[in-house]
Length: 157
Image 1 (cartoon, rainbow, N blue to C red):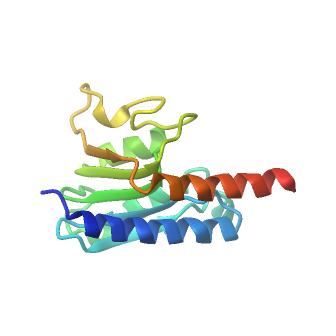
Image 2 (image 1 turned 135 degrees about the horizontal axis):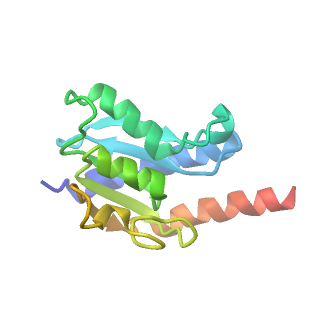
Image 3 (image 1 turned 90 degrees about the vertical axis):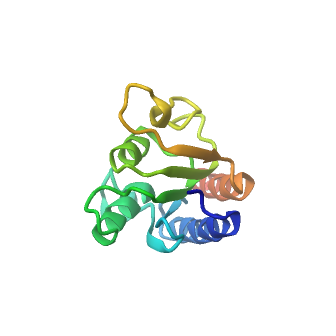
């Protein structure tokens, strides 16, 4: 079942706020929220690669890990929706598939590393046993603006 647009939009609001917080502590501004089948927030996270010194500490992976602890079906996140500000990379797209996420909703496209249609299309690869539904471009300009501002500041340093 697809969640109502206003529920997903509220999750994107939260993901954008998390992304802005990540930028403040020096991480790329990416936020992610995992919604349960009923639209309740199961988990949320922002990028923490710099904060943790961990190359796998992407917002999506952190949120999926936390959701798996609360979802009640172990690592299987059946019925969930992952809402993220930037198109997931190959690692995060793969994690979404392996976690059995039903739907991936993202903001800005990532033409350099996106794996949900831009550069690769991991989530719709017919060779895999699970293929989440994808909704691209939700509040894309807001997501992209956070990224542009962050990298503009980084280049100015």
